[in-house]
Image (cartoon, rainbow, N blue to C red):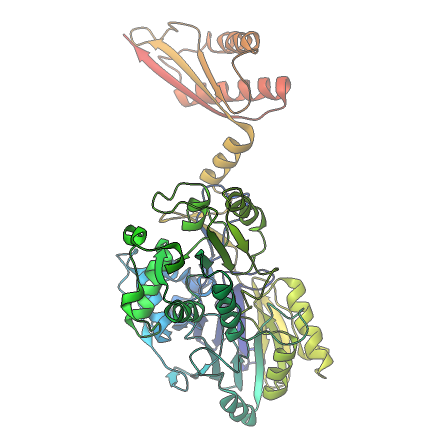
Length: 556
Ligand SMILES: [Zn+2]
Ligand SMILES: [Zn+2]
């Protein structure tokens, strides 16, 4: 056996150098474990795309080696691509916590063909999977049921924090298992991979409980108003606090937004959310109560187009009309990239007379990711030999790497990964050892397509360059043209004022196709020539490259 085979390998299909679509592969000889399978949200240059998922080629090529998929927690950037991965690997067992299992099952309802039944695991539970022994460790984060992984491999212990913060006063009273961390550390930790999201932020993150105190104050100060709170549907502890405050001040709660209803129902069913059912009022019965007796809990904290809050702001939510007695709380952060949309919703709400409060005005939100001092605690406690920062853009990974160096770790023992990298770790050395196929796939409805594929290119071209449809009518009898070609354009020139140019285009086309023989010539070739002629013409005349669609119609 050569040295390479004696090491464990860690490959990255997402989640490094970016925020989103977390997916790592741990490998030893002929066995692989997949850690998380998350999605990312599309950027502006992906019109019509719902979500972005990692390219699974590496996993598909090695399907017989994959022993399990381990899920750290139920956020979309960790489970969002799971249905698409399970389409490719239908028989691989999935391990996850109770809430994660419930959220995954919810998701799989929309993917009827997948028969996977995720296996529910609890913190402290140890599962033997091939050569690996996987222990799940309780951590605190902005969703309950979050777990770190302590994986004993034939080479040594690998610890992955998953997303975490150290909250000493969590809402469920169940703090991160620091005792277990210390015990694991005593065995010696070979490799640590840890959440880098807030590696640039000094100090400690605030406890989730602080948000509860702020919200409580806001409820008192705005006792006569109708309160509307937008937050992340998956933040079950935040929602629990809001429910408690509503109960305390005798307000009824109205859930709006599909994911809010979905997740709250799921969480309540498995006992992760606890409240008196009588405080819930259906949106249709809301007008039986005074404004001061109502709290509306909704999605849309990121200004998402079809979310409940955006529809309210646009005046498109027919059961809720925003007015001057509304107090809107954004109990959320601004996810980079969403600034414009959120700003737009805030402006619309203000224009309807509502009062608004958001993160920069009061402590109505806390981050779910560890700040520098918390990261230092984990490094100091676990004392890993090697370190790989994960879950963050390059700057976050770099900051986390610097933090490890400040704590005395040798630079040679740290590797900052990029998507597609494989890192090999044996008892004495960590190094980048190669790459695996990686990239992105785009999901549009249920369809998965290549990035930059034909549909995508057409959409970009339509959006940026417009469209030109050419109709050529010929006689079915002899294949001759029955009239001048007809031209319809959208998105790059108006008919009005361009009549002359349009006539000229028709003539140019006519000159070209007049010699074509529609009886004997291949139509696709004729269409190809039409496209070429028009492309050259439009580019010369107006520096545009519209999508050109020639249609040939036979008439009697
Ligand atoms: Zn995450
Ligand atoms: Zn998370």
